[in-house]
Image 1 (tube, rainbow, N blue to C red):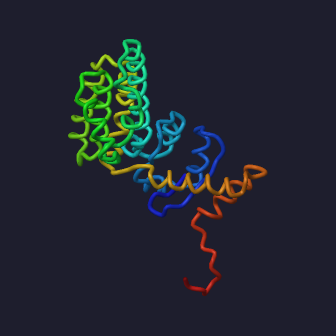
Image 2: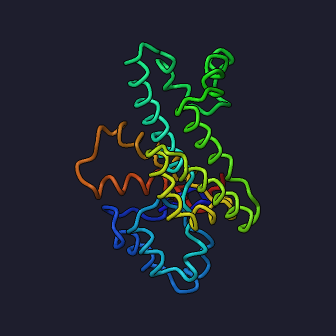
Length: 239
């Protein structure tokens, strides 16, 4: 558990169960629980259950991070590309050969040469081009200021994605439809797990530098020490 405002770790628990998250919520007074503005997470059923049982008006505060959704769409686009590439190669056509990286990369991060190579594919009638366009449109729907407009935009996207006849994309669309409420919360609340992911990277670096830890308690202690926001200066010493 991390505090987005302070950028520190506030709780470490074993496993990914409802009880793992309940351990933290059980330490809070009722007023503190009411004061929680937002809880960002992946789409874990265990975490959703814990927050709903504990936090008042949880349905308006749970926000699903953008990155796992982008990751799922990226994998779906690549599955469409691989299947279509097999079909084309069997016909002696290599249009999609070597396009995996370009199709999964944010267009803003492509070099001019890469973009020039990718441009003909983007405007083609291939299934891969359609899948890519659907994925890119989804990634453009995270900046709406109101719940009404966000829901309207996503429902329009869902209509296209569910009728696209591309099963990997349709599967992701079904997941998004089931979790749309949390996606809209993330958009309206401007919430994401970016800071938490940064902390996770630091934790992994700690683990690598230590070449692992003998047990979980030592691992937790190291996380708290380095990332728990401790004030290690002696009393009377100012930074």
